Image 1: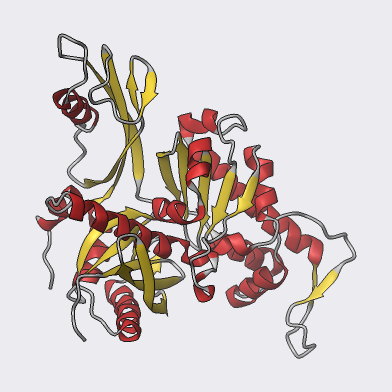
Image 2: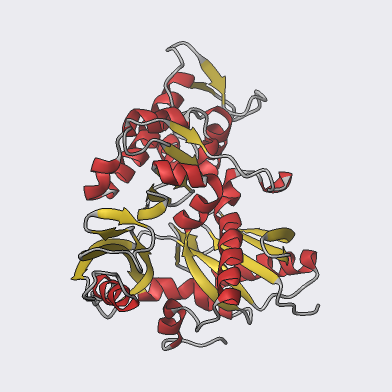
Length: 406
């Protein structure tokens, strides 16, 4: 298999499965998906690697399958990052415009950006993303203040950081397959790129990606990512609650969730369903009301936790600032009425995200939102680098001091 530079690889190492996509760049803005590899996750809990060999084996199997289908061996991949170890903080900075004619210069921009991104972290923490909020020139929002007239230039960054060891584990897994990680991308930003539109982001939207072990969220304002977060709770917690509440095995509880689960209490006290439906030994009647109550309570808790995770930005979770409401994606978003639960808890309109029309049929399931978003992000990165070639990302530069490909 030949190595070709016009292919982009994307890898998501999730709690339930590993997904790998390979896309071929066609022209300047088009991407044709030519390879898909999947495997059941092993050694991954709540987005963290707990068994390096098991996680490596299932990830490498998925990469190999994607390369076989694509007929090409990629050199590098874009990698999704999630996990409860992720945290963030906002830091603002401002400078007085230095020129005598009050015209913002490149030096003013570089100074205010350096100040806003200059906070040092503990030795065991690593910056993953600096997410810039809109510039403010004399209090008004501007997309690019350079050459504009004003007296005071302000900017704020939402800085996402993670545990150095936990961030490096999935990268070492990729390196173990003789691949480089081109960029690490927050799962929430990857998903948001696919299931929210430019209009959504301009109007204000909250993206919530409910996975099996974690829930990632991203708040967009004025067309840009404003704040992000990850909470260590997801679809597995619904399954666990059903298992405990109905005295079922984990496999049985997962089947009940898939078959009967919904995020709104609708059943009456007399409605019953069968566990298996085959009346064989071990089959039994279950109360539909109990299923509804258990699932609804846990789903609502997930959205309450997301709301608390937003912290001071909770003031922005209002209909007038989130005019596009909430968009839900991830594997657990298949749960019926989950949008209704989100609307009840968050107090704004909510909908389950839809894939763009260009996404082929076998990838339209919401569990593929993150890995599809990685390809989208990769295409944009390649375009930017062609226009203005530059050094490898600061994030990867930081990590290179701690390990090298095996």
